Length: 113
Image 1 (cartoon, one colour):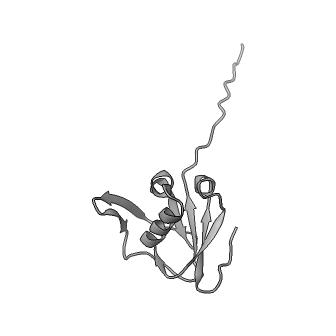
Image 2: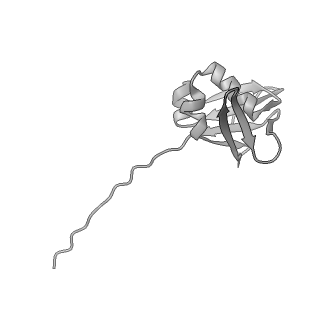
Image 3: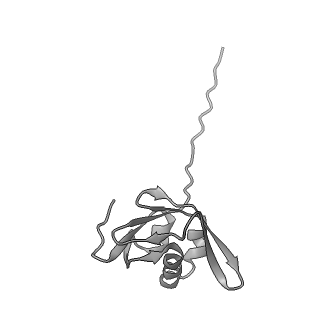
């Protein structure tokens, strides 16, 4: 489900609860943008998404999982990324992937002798 963004932009794909929360499957935003700035933009566009979706979601940029955490303090949230600050570039594809639960069916077999 790759979406080609317009020039100067990147695309973001929403899966599962992220899609339900936003009411969308994708968006396009102007690049470059840090991951923290993206989260702030999403929070302004979809109030509550940070605590209800983003804090527990995995994020990929161009199909590579990104390690990050969002720590709250008195001044708001600060990105604690592994390595350098994560900058999303023109043409990149970001995916927000919330955790999903899978119901497993359990079958018990009775063996009569």
